[in-house]
Amino acid sequence: MKSSSSSSSSIDMDDERLLAEVAFKDDSSSSMVIKIRRKLPDFLHSVKLKYVKLGYSSTFFINNNNNPASSTLLLLLLSLLLAFFTHRLFLLFSQIWITRKTISFADSSTLVLIIASTTLLVFLLAIYFSKTPSPVYLLDFACYKPEDQRKMSVDSFLKMTEENGAFEKDSIEFHKRISHRSGLGDDTYFPRGITSTPPNLSMKEARLEAEAVMFGAIDSLFAKSSTTVNPMVDIGILIVNCSLFNPTPSLSSMIVNHYKLRTDIKTFNLGGMGCSAGLISIDLAKHLLQANPNTYALVVSTENITLNWYFGNDRSMLLCNCIFRMGGAAVLLSNKSRDRRRSKYQLVHSVRTHKGSDDNSYNCVYQREDEKGVVGVSLARELMAVAGDALKTNITTLGPLVLPFSEQLMFLVTLVKRKVMRSAKVRPYIPDFKLAFEHFCIHAGGRAVLDEVQKNLQLTEWHMEPSRMTLHRFGNTSSSSLWYELAYTEAKGRVSRGNRVWQIAFGSGFKCNSAVWKALRDIPAKDCPSTNPWFDCIDNYPVLPLPTTSSSSSSS
Image (tube, rainbow, N blue to C red; front, side):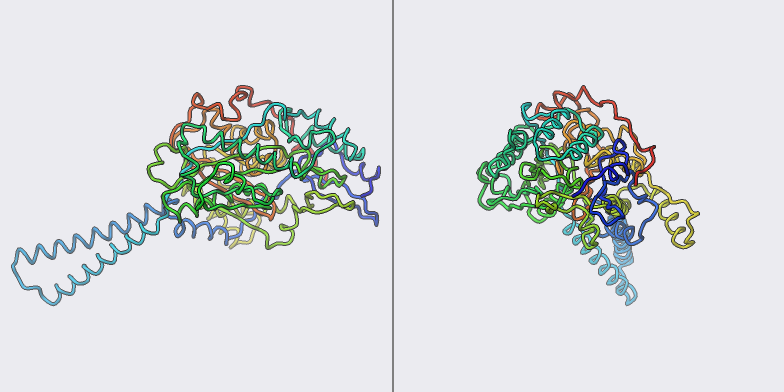
């Protein structure tokens, strides 16, 4: 790839944000600049009715156990009908008993109708309860916190980058500008293979990173008093997700071997599914738990960066170096009714959106070689548009499941008006998701995305604090970042019984996934264990936010 002074002058590098798009010059040269998109598409201003319909179909026909409003309505209706027919049957028999009359043909027909109707209602109630899936409880979770010697400041990272020798001057300057505006702080962590001199990017180092992260998170999880589970006996389901490191034997086999898990355990290893894979694992665990009663599921979410550090000069691939850091999380789920009392949360909804059928969506985050054969993950120019479309679809499907009736009514009335009148003068109604959730865990993929999600969903700085502080303290830890954010909320003592938590993440493919949790008990800050990754630093947060550039003009 060529670099020129003209390409650097076509963009104000000081205004660069975390997410960028590749733009080729109009001339015949192969030079390239990074064009920055400051805004997600205004996805709440253009909604497709089919996704609203999908949300309502989910409300009334899918997972009744996870839709208390529709479940209550259906049960009330069936109960009223059953009571009505039972009452009619009682009156008929009372009349016969009192009058001592022989049943007439009309009475016998009525009797047959009432008995048949009552039998049918009892049958429908039996089907309803048999089809209602078992609730899924989250007993506890733990996030991996590396030892202090793995910690590296922004300045140390830039010094390491400059001394490495693999990067050209323009690439080093790009690292500097992105790093100082990325929202990452001075306490993020790197694996040993990358910080070694020279870097030791070997399979052995990658395995050591994977073992340290996964075993560290799992050990912290089972060290908690709330998880009195014997992993060798009780764990029936194991799911591991890691996008870019998939050795043989698999990461799930690595865990089975280390903890000597039982021989009939159901194991799954999810690869290449991006930063949203953590919620895919949760959704998979939910379905497996509903199909396999009386067991526990262990979900491990991580990313491995030792073998996926980019040592080239293609700017569309350099962004990952500036934001991705070492981390992972382990989550213990149960379908046992007796575990409700000691569980932290219950899974209420999981909504998955996959846009892979569209070529732009499929190719926007793509692992490939650059022109010199160096492998990296490139971000295409369509990334922000694709992310906005996936978010739009996901929240439109989720809305009918979680929003209060008043919000749904206003949203639907405005939507129908816009579709029928086909007029842009009808202002779209943006639902207030703050009425549906008390806490938001938005994947800490980058500062620019957090800025625009906050703006589009009209969230406050308080709602965004867990995501922004996680990005600052731990960087982008991929699929596990949502759990660092929830750990932050717990460490602040903000979770009370009945609170609803919305986790939302997106990743390559392109996918956007949501999970909704309901807190089953209060989680006071004083009960925050030493295994919480924020335990020794929570009083230092929140830090003052860096100045934003949302008000500045877009360079695209």
